[in-house]
Image 1 (cartoon, protein in one colour):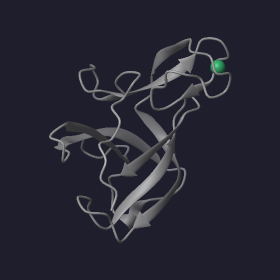
Image 2: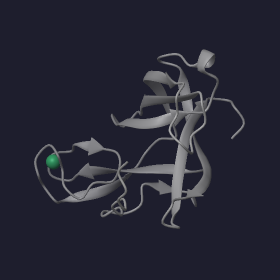
Image 3: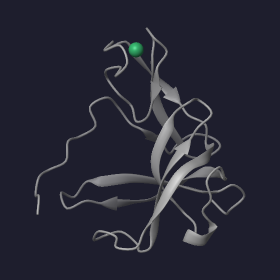
Length: 138
Ligand SMILES: [Zn+2]
C-alpha cells in the first residue's frame, strides 16, 4: 500500500464555499490561448503559458459519462457513482454523483453540491463536492 503525503494544491483553491448562490467550482483559463480546465492550474497544458486566470464555473452541467463502483476503497460509500460532468464553459469535471445508481443517465442535468469536509490521515480538511440531479435538495 502506498503511504505518502498528497501534494498540496499549488495554484489556489478549486471550490469556493462562500459564494452567494451556493458553492462554486473554480477552474483556470489561459489568458494567451483561451484554453479552459478544471481544477485550477498554474500552467496551460495547451500552450505551456503561465499566464492563467481563475475561472468561476457554472453550477449546473450535464453528465457526460459515469460508472458505478460496487467495491469502493476505504472511506467511500458503496455503491457510489463516479462521473465526468460537462459544464457550459467547455470544462469536463471528474466527480461523484449524488444519486442512486439506477437514476444516473448520460446527458442528465446535474447541479453542484458541497459535501461536509472530511479529515485526511494527516489531519487536514479535505474539501469535497458532488453533483446531484437538478431540482434535488441541496
Ligand atoms: Zn494556453
